[in-house]
Each structure stands twice: as structure tokens, then as C-alpha cells.
Image: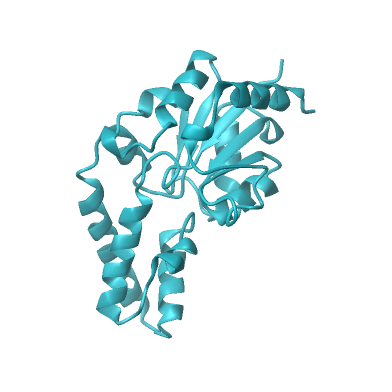
Length: 223
């Protein structure tokens, strides 16, 4: 019997930290005189902090020294950390615990695959660590999504072949990464934006046990 694996992104999938990233980037954008909207923030989802700042500066047509660039990176992160320091279980998105609990009962290996360097801290604050067999965060990868590195490492850590894994993502870059890796991709969020995903749901409350059972069978049937 093939070993299957379920891999979850963090921000915007398991917990609503996406709003805190937006607030922290908007604070910096306001400081720099750049108009930064929630629509602009869509391009930042699943992307490394460094690349996000590059995109922001491109929006404002701003060129800076490496020293200033690094200072702004740190400033944004410190701002973000202030927001997430107050997190608790109430930040878990609806339906997530139900899905994680069901998969845990069925002894399905689960991994977190996130670009966030704060993933472990967040998972501890919301008390979801016991559900996961492996955590892969931004400290363990060198290539940002849509490169599939984070998901490939996660699959390896739980001992599953990439083609026998499924990824839950809320970002276009994450869906692309999962597809490149040959994994089943599930978009969580606006199905129109995440149309490249193999499956799409507005949130985890729409995912029932039958869908999960069928998905597990599909993964196990792959070569």
C-alpha cells in the first residue's frame, strides 16, 4: 500500500495570518508613500519576504541600497511579529480542526509546507503541532514558490512520493508549485483566482469526509 501525504500551507489556509502580513506590508507601504491595496496583496501570498519587498519597491519605482533594503525587511517582520504574538486557537480558520482530526484518526501523514519563517511559533500558539508529522518552513528552503522545493521536502519528510501527495493552498504561487511537483492541488479561497487547482473550496467547512476518503483512494491508486 502506497504511503500518502497531506501537505498544508499555513498563512490563509490553516490560520488567518494573511491579514497580518497585509497590515504589516501596508504600514511599510504607507511609510514609503506607496498605495498598497488588498488586491495588490494577492500577489504577495505564498511569496518570500524578500521577493515581496522587491515587488513593493517596484510598485513605487524605488531603488535602495542593500542596507536600507535589509532594514525595511526587518521592520516589516517586527511589525508582523507584534501582530502574531497575540494569536491563539481562535485564529484557526473554520473547519480546519475537523479535517485535521479526521485525517489524524485515519493515520494519514501530514506536513506543513510554508514559506513563513515564523511557522513553528504560530503553530505552537494555536496548538496545532500535535496533528503534524513534519514542519517545513522558510528556514529550510532556498527557493520560493512557485518552485516546489518546500512541498518536495515535506513529502520526503513524511516518506511519501510527490505523486501520492495533496497540497492545500490559498495562493496562486502555491498551487503552481504543487502542480509542478505532480501533487494534487486544492485551492482554499476564491475559486476563480485559484482556477489552476485540481479542486477548489471557499474554506474547509465545505470539505466533508467522503471527499477526503475519495482523495485518499485516488492518491493510493497512483503509480
